Length: 103
Image 1 (cartoon, rainbow, N blue to C red):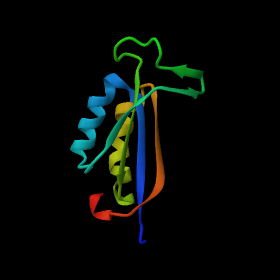
Image 2 (tube, rainbow, N blue to C red; image 1 turned 90 degrees about the vertical axis):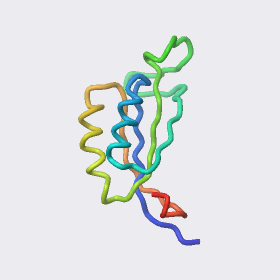
Image 3 (spheres, one colour; image 1 turned 45 degrees about the vertical axis):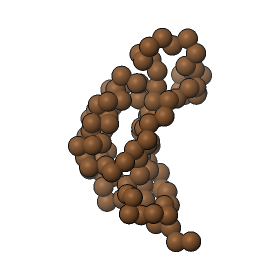
């Protein structure tokens, strides 16, 4: 089966920032993205978990999107400006997709 190279951007941020990130992705013409709740993990400050967190403050979400490599910098620049002073993480990785017309 033929696959096509793309880039995947993963963005983990506090839930209250989610709408601003999604608005930015929409403004940048990103065709699609998915949002997942982050339940637990471990980072540079140790383990964390969602248990006991009331409301959205302190809750984390993971937003990911897949796009052409040629678009990565134009999406990352305004994204970095938005999230650089926030709690979270942004990664970029290589992926292979089957239906390239979706991206």
